Length: 51
Image 1 (cartoon, rainbow, N blue to C red):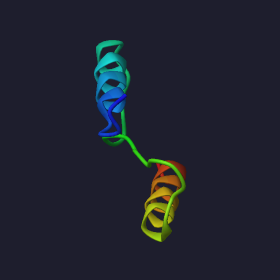
Image 2 (image 1 turned 90 degrees about the vertical axis):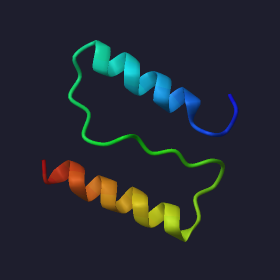
Image 3 (image 1 turned 45 degrees about the vertical axis):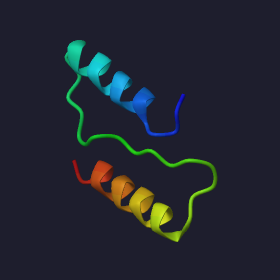
C-alpha cells in the first residue's frame, strides 16, 4: 500500500464491477484524522442518512 489510496481505487472499481451503486469516490484518511478529516467524515455521515 502506497498511502495514496490505490487500495480505495481498486476497491471502488471492484465494487462497481459487481454492480454496486457507490455514493462517492471513497474516503481516505491516513493515521489519525485531523480537524479537516473529521469534518469530511461528519459530512459523509450526514449524506448517508439523507440518502
